[in-house]
Image (cartoon, rainbow, N blue to C red):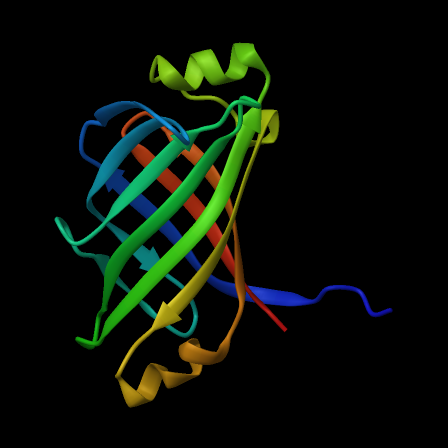
Length: 153
């Protein structure tokens, strides 16, 4: 079996509005983090994350993990719109999770945050994004998140 190969797609910084506490639902504790904006930069594409055009529907699961369900809109520097969606999971020790909840910065090597982004665009110059699988390695920041996103080859 071959080893998984990848190449960098872009680095991304996401700013978030304050969390909206939905509460205890049948699936778990639900919160929504509206996207306030941000940026992404890579060798093949770069641009901004549109504010008020996305959110993260977070679910605190019974096993202590946090399940991410994100939709957002990217606008490249040359004007193309790209829809980005990803699901992911974040988990760590109770101590690290409490620090993140208090807004403290915690090194990304102290917990697990991985996502599986997919893209959708009508822009011909970025149509290749419609047919790739990507993986994101993330870090929760006090007012947002940062990711390194890789194309799986």
